[in-house]
Amino acid sequence: MQEPELDIPAVRRARVTWKALLEREGLLQLPAAHDALTARLIERAGFPAYQVGGFALVGARYGRPDIDLEHFGEKNRAVQDVIDGCALPVLVDGDDGYGDAKNVTRTVRGYEALGASAIFLEDQTAPKRCGHMAGKSVVPREDMVAKIRAALSARQNGDTFILARTDALAPEGVESAIARAKAYLDAGADGVYVEGPTSIEELERVGKALRGAPLATSVLERGGVTPWLSPDEFRAMGYSMILYPTSVLFRLAFATEQALADLRTAKPLDPSASIDMKAFEGLVELEQWARIESAFPVGKDR
Image (cartoon, rainbow, N blue to C red):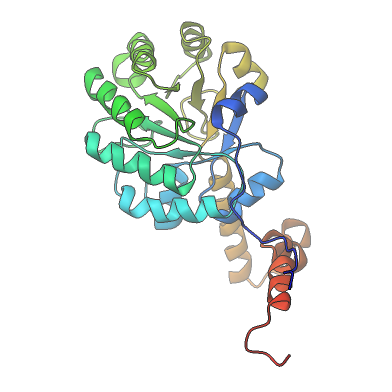
């Protein structure tokens, strides 16, 4: 008996490699997904890729700040849940690797096994913190080079993209950040991520010095230190990946506060500020699950 062909929801489909994606797109805008529903909405919006960032993940899942309170043990299940809900290529935040080379090895192998297309690691000292917060410091350059080499050795798939992030700009200046980025590329990193430029001039200096290499930075739309520029402006400066760690999260928090305030004061829902039940059922693929239930009845009268 031939089984019916069904569109099984949330199946892990083949993903294009991160390098191929960069070549195809030229510049990636990477909104952060803190859960699977957000990842699916990012896909529906037409983005070709996304990130799972620590700031949004720990803020939404644990209600805590991004100050090194959660490590791989807490985050890997959350990352798995997000990746399982979306077929897009994903960049996963590996923080500082959570220790020395053996911890970096575990982190890279763990996230790679979950389906991460790319993983970034940073050179902050522990306890690390959000890259746009004050008070950061960085490990010796040689220590980060060793971590990068450990990450490259750990990956089981040569297509897994290792993005090396430096947070040296704030504590050591832009020239140190550029020198570190070059050293990380020399160590074999597939790309570099310079966190925290505070002006267009600094963005231009970084982009010029590292032009030709896959180059990332991040923009926090409210409260961050890096200026908001259009994707075309970033591309012209030499950037190929722009991370948006807070854009969705901050709007979500605002919308949730508004919804709860309305409920508290018995104000009815404004239909223009919400999706309806049918739209939500489409998002979570209820119809596809119902077809599976119908095609393979269990415990029902036949």
